[in-house]
Image (cartoon, rainbow, N blue to C red):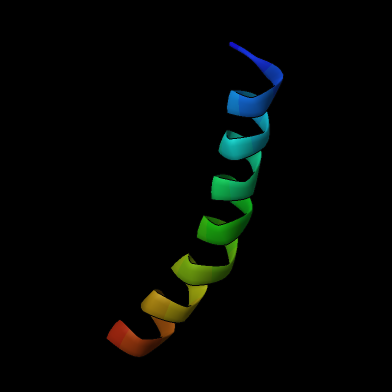
Length: 28
C-alpha cells in the first residue's frame, strides 16, 4: 500500500467517523 492510499484510507475513516453518528441520530 502506498502512502497516498493509506492517507486516503485514513481520511475515509475520519469522514465515516463523522457521518455514522449523524446517520444513526437521524435514523433513530
